[in-house]
Length: 227
Image (cartoon, rainbow, N blue to C red; front, side):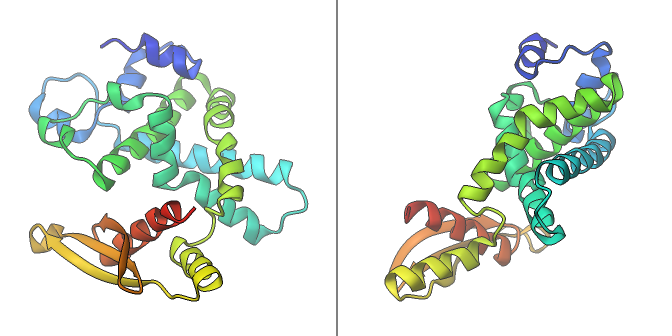
């Protein structure tokens, strides 16, 4: 498993390569490769999530002394949610190194973003175990904290549906309407496609495992379309 380019990208060389392998191993891979010598990355993700929250909290607390708790909380939530973490994973090229089953490798959209986000958190956990808190925090400071500028400028700390409604009412005097366009998959694993309309015009579509998720995704895409 060649990971040298990934280590160069993240500016961290693992002393224990098995920790990195574990961070990159999705549970589906073990179903097809039962003799693989490391565990899946779910425990590592659990650890990395805690390290990520602590480091971002520390960074926000120290660098924004005038912000109240509520503001710090919303900024942190926007920095560590699965959408932002999947963006970070793509920034460092993590997708090329993930070990997935053939079926999971074909997944796109939200499912793939969740897998990428989880792997990114697992990577943070692996760095923490291999090099300690300071090493993990360096990764977070380099690849995640710079996203705060985008969070503030694009108001990503705000709910996308609320932002879209404010924008369309202010600029067009129109309230967005959401319509379910499709439902696919079995009852226990449905995927919803929702369209957001301004008057009768379809502006954007979103997909999600619930109608609410699909509406939020549609709203985010609509905001981009209306920029």
